[in-house]
Figure (cartoon, rainbow, N blue to C red):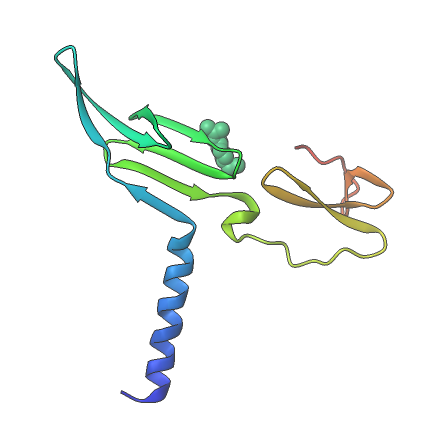
Length: 119
Ligand SMILES: *[C@@H]1O[C@H](CO)[C@@H](O)[C@H](O)[C@H]1NC(C)=O
C-alpha cells in the first residue's frame, strides 16, 4: 500500500471517529413488572421507558426505544459551527447549546437580517 493510500485511509478513520464521537449508544434491558414486559434504558442511574426522548442541559438529545439508549450532542457541541467572525457591528452570543450572531447595539436582533432572534 502506497503512502497516499495509507494517509487517505487514516484520514477516513479520523473522520469516522469524529462523527461517532458526538453520539453514544447502549442496549436497553427488558424488565418484567407485574407480569408485563417492558423495555427500559438506564441513563445516569435513572431508568427511562422506551418511547422517551429528552434533552439534557449539557446539550445531549437522548432517546430510549426498543433498540436501547442513544444520545447525541446537539447544537454547537455537535460540531455545527457558523464560520463567521464577529465584526464591529455584530457579536456572538451563546444561549444554551447554540450561539447567535447579533447586533452589537442590540443583542436581541439578528446580525444580518436585523429581525428579532427567537430563542
Ligand atoms: C431536543 O433538542 C432538539 C434540537 O434542538 C429539538 O429538535 C428537540 O425537539 C428537543 N427535544 C425535546 C424532547 O425537547
